[in-house]
Image 1 (spheres, rainbow, N blue to C red):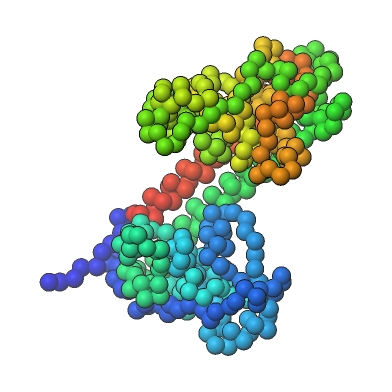
Image 2 (cartoon, helix red, strand yellow):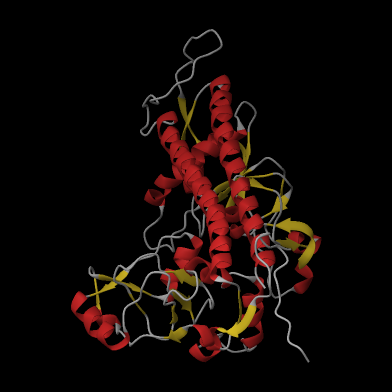
Length: 417
């Protein structure tokens, strides 16, 4: 039977012919490193990469860096060589198969079998190789070699046996260049979003007084250009029609769960942010009746007292909650979103109110005693309008980022075999 080399679904017009099917180990040298013990880490020196560093870099998160001395690095490098530009480090334990493209020849070292080292030697375009490790075909291979019920590992042997379809170097470079342009757009949008978020944070510090009785640095004017009245100061409990936490039905009773009443988890708040449009869990009517939980009407403030303390959201659907959050229904004459923005601003200060000896929690009385500066209703609305417009811009950029990531994911599926 004649073997036919495959071609990708999406291809640049100037290229033709099938891609050569190989195993990674037939093209590239794949190995690991000599072991480094934790007591050999230093505060400065040569960056020392662990799986957690690779995963954090891939997600765009911050991570505590580790280092080793130049003396140890030179000694180890004499044995196994040095990591070079366009090499790949890929996680072999934990979150397996997460790649890191080495972008320059600066010294770095990495953690033994937890990370695999794919030495490139310029045989494959570095970014093309990196992009391969993001493709659906590679993810499928990982899934097939992972054993159910055991800790997943991606070993040197498995890496060497990984199926890999290879086009000519010019085609690799063209694909890499195109995908890099998409990446650059995503990074540009991410920086734009981060700057806008930082601007919003700075503006909020000037819109709200930092101390009791202090005048905010930024004030709005009324429609005639006149100053609004001075702000008052009230306890949060004074502006509430109702401020009450929820409760959790007994988890051992299955009849209490998977009903038709949305039941809030803290992760719903941290995932969705300002507006809560769904919950990941639900309870039944009997679960509600046999607990201290209650149905919180839409457009209430949901304030976290446990876990992510001080996180605040606005529910757009009726929900029930646990005792971990305070549910706040405001009196007439107070703008919901103004209170939302103030409590969001206040989140950086709530740690001062956490009681000594607790697991980083606050109680209902602390929440009710939070002092809130209250401007006139018209000024509240001006503040709402301004901050909401920033939120809409941030959300719009966020959507562009997600759309670009989806576009890239489609390209990876169609431009690789």
